[in-house]
Amino acid sequence: MSVDAMTADSIPKEKSHVAFFRQSGWLMIANVAGGMLMWAVHLLSKKIEPEQYGVFVTLLSVIMVVPAIPLQMVFAQQTAKALATNRTGELSGMIRLIWLGTTVIWVVVAAAALLMQDWIVGQWKLGSPVGLWVLLPALLFSLWMPIFGGVLQGAQNFLWLGWSMIANAVGRSLIAAALVLFVVGNAVSLMTGVVMGLLASGIIVIWQARSFWNAPAVKFDWRNLLKQVLPLMIGFTAFQFLFTADTMFVKAYFSKDETAFYGSAGTLARALMWLVMPLATVMFPRLVHSAAKSEKSNLMGVVLLGTAVLAVCGAIGLTVLGPFVVKFVFKPSYVEVATQVLPWYAFAMVPIALTNVLLNDLLARGVYRVVLPLVILVVGYAAALTQYHESLIMVLQTLGIFGLGALAVCGWFSWRSPQIVGQSPQSA
Image 1 (cartoon, one colour):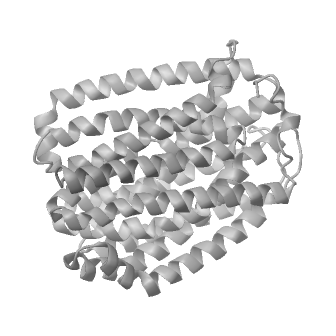
Image 2 (cartoon, rainbow, N blue to C red; image 1 turned 60 degrees about the vertical axis):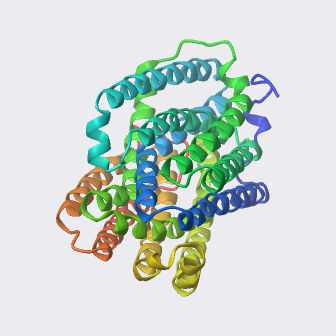
């Protein structure tokens, strides 16, 4: 379907809960299936040394720092709004410009990293620069993916968005397994699987979004765009930091083996987000689309309740079954520490999952006042991690406390802000 043909009227109405749950269900299937395949990569930890697995966790944490969530949400918002208002030419120009801009930024960062590779290898305890070399293309694809994934999300093309997730997981798991089992068992082999998975996924989303980025471009109002984009970038960057930063701090303050043990528990606990995030993923463009058309919405309450039930049940399940899963997946040396921290990790994910729903709702409705308090809270979280890290459990207690704080901040603004979409950011 061409961009011109894909008008706002061709997108399912937000109030159609049947379509919502069908799309959410497919993304859940894709997320869980893809997540299980990505999780299967960690089965290979039995075939490599704990030190190498710790290096792999470190390199993955660097990729997690890429503002993928903010970028995707920005493009989801802009695509949904462009389709609702028939301004796809402006969207095309924006896509091309940001695509070029992120590539230029990557070139600068890659050049700096190669110039400083000896320092980076020593600081991150990589052992050799090869891991850094493999990391760089992974970072490039990680910058491109959310741009075009966001376009598909905003266009509510969840079918191919889901297939891109599966392709990412299949590519990662198959290539990593082949290299570890038949070539060499180290972090570089695992990271090569990550690169190939991102490449496969990137090809899908870029191709499926071609009718948008290949459309005739029209000049757009930069000032108006920045007013919409900057709060989303800052707000979702703060959320992503809250969601992912603990691994980097653990790497800085704990031994290689402890980092590997912590990473194994984190892999299982973050699986909760694979299950619940599709609800917010489908909700966001629908709320943006409704906002552009000044339509009311009651979707957020349904999504919040579903997320709460799934997240709590998942955390309880991990607490009960986690010790058996850890024994099955990881080496015996991982079991004791991973089992101790897993319940803390799982329940720390629950308020973060709920925060994700509320934040998606607030920013979709243009309630940008939430951003500054959230940023202040996240800065406090970073400061707290530098002071309170006597044990892995203390790190997770800190994460849980600040996760509850973020939920309280977003909950306050949700309660104070009327559940009416279509109001302007200024009036919100």
